Amino acid sequence: MKFDDLHHEEGPSIVTDLPGPKSKGILKRQLEIEGSALSYPKSIPVVMEEGKGATIKDIDGNIFIDFFGGAGVLAVGHCNPVIIEAVREQQDKITHTLDFPTEIRLTLIEKIREIMPGKLKNNVKIQFGGPTGSDAVESAIKLAKYYTNRHSLIAFEGGYHGQTAGAMTLTSGSFYKEKYLPMIPEVHFVPYAYCYRCPFHKNRDTCDLECAAFYEHILDDPHSGVVKPAASIIEPIQGEGGSIVPPKNYLKNIENISREYEVPIIFDEIQSGFCRTGKMFSFEHSGAIPDIITLSKALGGGFPLSAIAYHEDLDVWKKASHIGTFRGNVTAMAAASASIDFMLENNLAEHAKMIGSKMLKRFEKIEKDSDIIGEVRGKGLMLGIEIVENKETKKPSSKLASAIRTESFKRGVLIEIGGHYDNVARFLPPLVITKELAEAGTTVIEEVIANLQQ
Ligand SMILES: Cc1ncc(COP(=O)(O)O)c(C=O)c1O
Image (tube, rainbow, N blue to C red; front, side, top):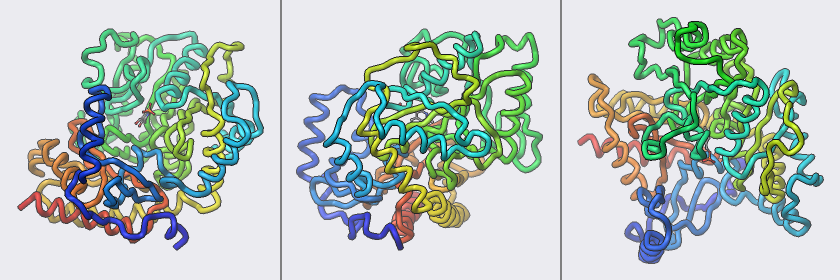
């Protein structure tokens, strides 16, 4: 298999207590000197030293299978040699140019335009943001406000868009913002198609997409309390909200309604883009077409980069109306360009689809014998298992989900947790993961869940 030599050979291999002796000291010191908002190492106490493909060696010599993938960043794997070579070559030339053109900047813009589907192909403008996904979201809403001369925004329940003020306001989870009031004004939330917990108490197979109809009602009814918005922003497949794949026709419906009411629609592809779900962009599963697309995470091939792609009609910026020192980092652009080539040359989308469907099938089997799995779901390698106390009541169990994360870690598999109630075990492995590593990791998850049920 073509990705075989990208990984550490022996994973998973746990050779010390966890955290290991060297890791312990470093983790302790980190807690002493770094700000207390630290998150991941508090749940997964590991000191990573050498990432290869879909595996990570820690500083004590333990090797983990990475089902976490840097929260979706590492589509082409840790330290993919093709990317590293491109980065080294670029770093010998120039590393910072503000928004002055370089060959690599233009090459990357051409490539992003070229991979756009349907009528967007070679028909979008690209605007680089600051280095992280939240910056792309800020650019997208600012552009929509400039374009429409309106100010209100619609976002969707369960959506995650980042931690800068605008992106955080559009994020539905109240945990991040309860101490940060006031948010940016006039942001309204409508339900997403979260069928397992449908707020309209409908069944996925027989419903009339009441959630989409509600979105239409909000736009249509002059007394809905929502002034005509500058844009609506939606994840075509929700990530942090719990790997939620909406039913067929949902996204197309949302697009149609948005068009009918002349509301630009932003698809946030920051987590779901770049082959993750078995297509270059996850909205390609739906036939829907956005006005603006936000890009980051896997865009940079492991290096921080964000951008928006938008229909040329929306290009209303005046000179310098959206500036920033690191608005496009040249090193990350070289990585991004090499990463897109790698994805296309190796048909990474197809590989993600193939491995993802095998994993999903196994999870579905595990679900049948399990009392604590409410639902397994996902597309490509964006997968999730919703954990409940009891299948009948569907009472969410973040405690069990967090136990799955801890026990998986102890057995050498790194996973993430998300979902409305922090009760969804989430899997976002590097897309270069082999069938063998995916199977080995899934077996660990299976054993962990079986043990927790006893
Ligand atoms: C869909 C989506 N949008 C935006 C963001 C924010 O990106 P960043 O954390 O790089 O700011 C994330 C991060 O997880 C995301 O999943």
